[in-house]
Image (cartoon, rainbow, N blue to C red; front, side, top):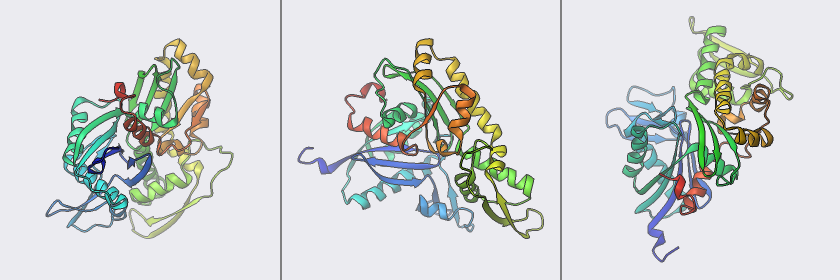
Length: 340
């Protein structure tokens, strides 16, 4: 670090559909929902992250709650810039550093188009980034898990985030084959909302559906250690009378059958496209499961039953991508061939 190193900072950002994580000096300094609350008249940010999430479903006409990320990419350019700026300010408040310039590495989905990539770069630059680099999510996840991505060894990563599921086979410092589908945590949440309306005539918001997914969301009806039922409270969709309904993991497993089958099919398609030598490595060593979706109960067992290959959940699946992005930033010369 030079004499004037305090004048600049290096940060890694996992700009996720559900959560945005900022890493600095190998530490998670910001971990907040990717949500912005706006004043509808001035279009200025009123709240960002957790505070904005608490406003969801509770705002008056003068306020608007926006999720700027959709399917892993920026859907609202202005809100994304406001969100990144706000979260960088949170980081500054925690670290008490002055930040006139920033060197930023942002992770992006492997299926990102040039237009989407440009939107991410522009948002980061407009939020104060002097130097902005990008790395693909599956590669960042592999680095975060601790895989030596430069080895002549095949590794498969299945990263289930909020907006996308990224599947990639990695060897010799590159992505040999990959598959990206827009089926992930957000689809799980919406399926739970739809099922409760259709089967129980109860209306629930996104936040409640998210809580159901966390507590009793399951990929299988036959779990070894099933969770207790989760009590859902809300209005009847016709009469508006108050309802109180228990939801079990067996029900959520049925409700999530369709998106889980799509993820299974994507994993199988990626395996079919894998060269035989790398397939042999993967079948011997197993497949890594990361991202928030990896926490869905029984998902590793379900995928193992489908493919016949062992699935291993990363030690810290929620932060694997962010940590890998941070490692790439810290060793930018070593990983220059991975960064755009």
